[in-house]
Image (tube, rainbow over all chains, first blue to last red):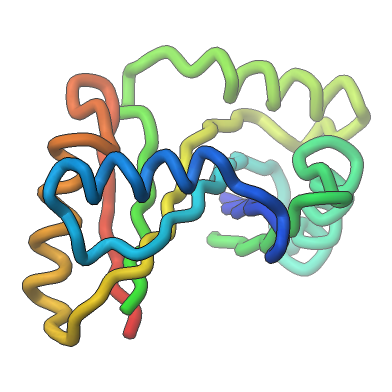
Length: 80
Length: 80
């Protein structure tokens, strides 16, 4: 089973990486870009068959290790 | 319009970050995790109405700036 975890900064948290990307893109001539935000995506291979319990475990992983929940939010998607 | 760009290492490229994540997770008791890969996701706000041309432009952005196409692959999704 595969779990896709997307982690991004919460709205309102300063995102200097995203700003740098937006600025570089407009400097390169992509003037249609008005804003950019960068986050990360973590793909996990997981043993087991039960998607519901896998999702619960991956949420636990996010809370304990993968995301900094003070400034980041995350979403979990399970693929079989 | 929004563009979601997912960038990840190509298969076969060593992913030390992913390995560190997988190892930390098993050390924390999440023994069902057999592998992890980390990539990034960039969300762009784009002016304009034409999704097809936006997609083409975002592909150009990936080739020129966002992805290192020697070791990374990317996918683009346009959302209105």
